[in-house]
Length: 90
Image (cartoon, rainbow, N blue to C red; front, top):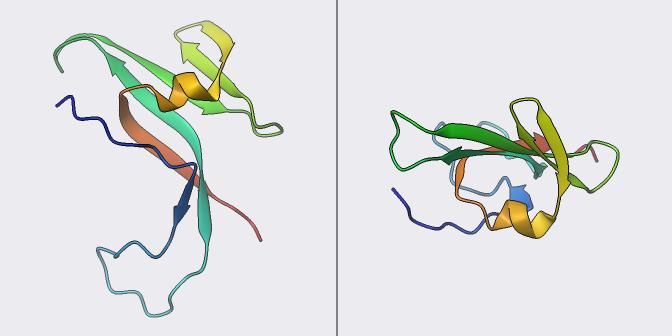
């Protein structure tokens, strides 16, 4: 599948849940990692990950043993395979 879906920096919890929740949450989640699959088919290719630095709003591109800084634009323009969000403490 090569459909483009716009990534969100923040993920609100008002998305309809897949399970019944007894107490609604007002928590907010921030994008912290994006896993990207490079290659035309699922049986072959290479995975890279974009990871937001914990202490700064900067991004890293991680591929095997190669770690480089990258722009947020590069992260948000990627063909994301899996998104990882972290809960923001209030």
